[in-house]
Length: 255
Image 1 (spheres, rainbow, N blue to C red):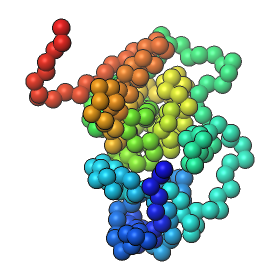
Image 2: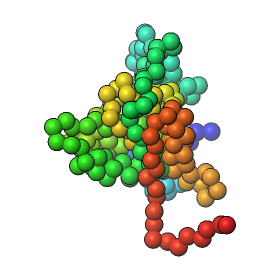
Image 3: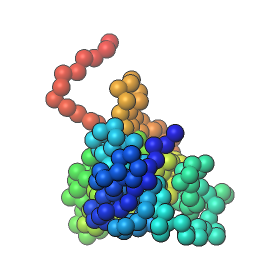
Image 4: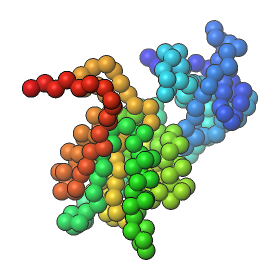
């Protein structure tokens, strides 16, 4: 079951809540995706998911607002869109997918945008900066970011995306698969990469959002999303490159 608790907002910026009930009186860091639950203001009664903070997770060390009981129950929803993200969960919501309509012609992939697959969100900013520096004089190139699963799912959680967009280093942000909340939505990673040309992008960086997921298992790591990106790009005939995660550690190669 979800570890949900009632709480009261005590600060709006940065967001902090005070739990009610057994843990009453404790002030805790919190985060609210306002695109889903609306704004949170001091005094609001909210329901928060406390699991990550109670577990002491580093990158997820805050409570997440599940619903604002004071001002978050009046949304009218969409009268037109019917494709759902986070479908069959309590946070399902309709989106307008960026994928090509059925029957429309595919873009010419001969000169399709190259795709850089990243396994960590921390690769996004330096890669975008390097791309911007390499752009030829006279015509600035347009770089887009496709956010996949493997890290944080809300697109609005990334400060890097906001900063890079504000500085003109990112021309667009598509959240694909389970990720949501970008400037545009794609139901699949393949659909997002296929749409890159029609979005006017000259190149794509694709990979997980912040807060990478790890499990101390052989393949249960969010960085494996980079493999999905490479498979999707190559299946579409797009040039693909991997941004590897490197360290100074000693590697043992299995032969």
